[in-house]
Image (cartoon, rainbow, N blue to C red; front, side, top):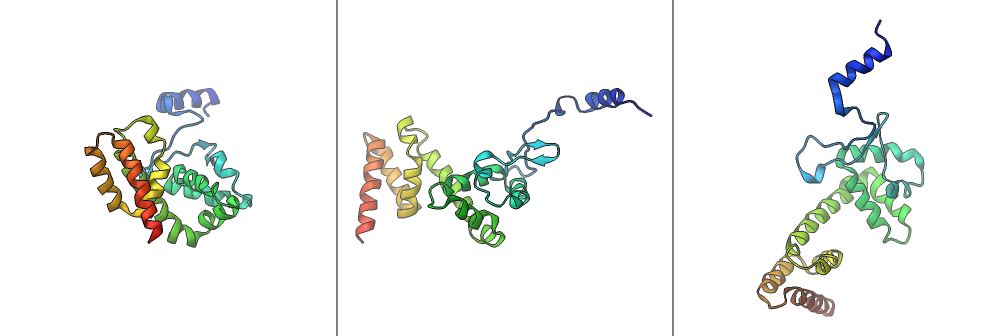
Length: 182
């Protein structure tokens, strides 16, 4: 029978630096949208604090852990961020995330579209100043109002302008006002 010290020494030789209490998971899929950021402790995935605060019925923690394992913690963190803009954040979170039907039919497609739009916006404003990069949520809202083709047209014209940031925000504001009038 091997002693605990012998077993520990064997595991240390075999797995080396992988024997940490915490480590980042990475999905087998190389897609950045599916990367996992949950951490393991004693075989369980930890739920991020901002998500944990929104779970009213703690019985649904396993459902949340399942979603973290399948899609990544960043999906649920984005849902938590969106929930904070609602009148009843925990109620919205329960309906959007905990509900299996709503998650499959609505929330997942909404998040994938949002991540895609964020990627396009970040790529578009990457050459601009830090101040312009802080307004990504405004730009994403404008894209939702105007559409992607209008945004791309505005960006194409903004690159040719003397002050691209000023032109972009002015054109977005004007296009949104015209959209509201029609």
